[in-house]
Image 1 (cartoon, rainbow, N blue to C red):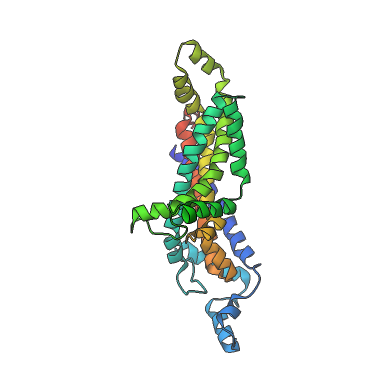
Image 2 (spheres, one colour; image 1 turned 180 degrees about the vertical axis):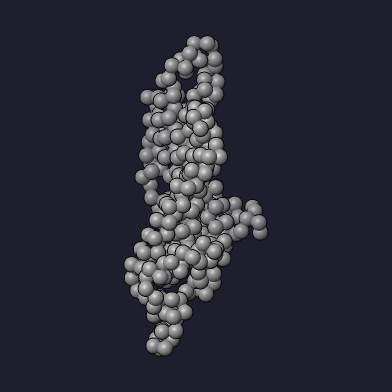
Amino acid sequence: MYTYIAKRLLVAIPTLLIISVFVFSLQKLLPGDPILAMAGEERDPQVIEYLREKYRLNDPVPYQYVSWLGSVLQGDLGISLRTNQPVLELVAEKLPVTIQLAIMSMIFAFVIGVPMGILAAVKKNTAFDYIANLIALSGLSIPNFWLGIMLILLVSVKLGWLPASGYEPFFNDPIRSIQTMLMPSFVLGNALAATLMRHTRSAMLSVLSADYIRTARAKGLSERSVVLEHSFRNAVLPIVTLSALLFGELLAGAVLTEQIFTIPGFGKLIVDAVFNRDYAVVQGVVLCTAIGFILMNLIADILYVLLNPRMRASL
């Protein structure tokens, strides 16, 4: 088991190195010059030259990359060109917001998607199956920004049940924090639930047609036992893998949803950084997101081994 984890970690190292090259190279293609924006309206040539020297923008690009990578390996993601704040502090400030949003979104996705997928598979080709597929298709088709705006109009403006926007740190006021996150979490979780429902249904249909399920039914086991204890336990493997990938995507930040609900997470941070040509923040956030995504893939692989006896036996 430990050897397997070590191999997966070794594979992640060159992956991160390649990602760092892409992150550093692609941000150079961003239009505009951040130094000109920082220099102000007068744009004194001496100030511009000083800023270029300070942030090493006059150095050759390969040297800039090696210098940046060396700092990253030491835990230094650079300094924001706009706020003069360490990028690591910005990431540490925004990461709990994004993690909270991702966790609550996944809770909505599981509560809605997995039971519907199980029932749709059990009741295949019935009215419930068709309705569940229609709901899943609607969840995938409805844009998040439209659903978010409609929820604000109905739940906040008309009914006054929840705050329309804003964010409260969880440890400051847990109740208020959950209230501000309910609508954006539902918006994201609704789309993820549709994906989970479709995959759960497919996995369950594959398992329900297996010989050992027919044997379990022939032994007189209850349908509940057959579905939950025998079928779902074997169908859960692809669901776990998919869930880890979906959670990794959420860690990248839901740009439109965070903008609509004014949530100060990774999505809003990266958008502001791109518009401000804040290269250090763009690099830091994308790199942290990539690390989070790779970490979730590693967790999915480990869970797959733990849940699959045949995988454990082959290690």
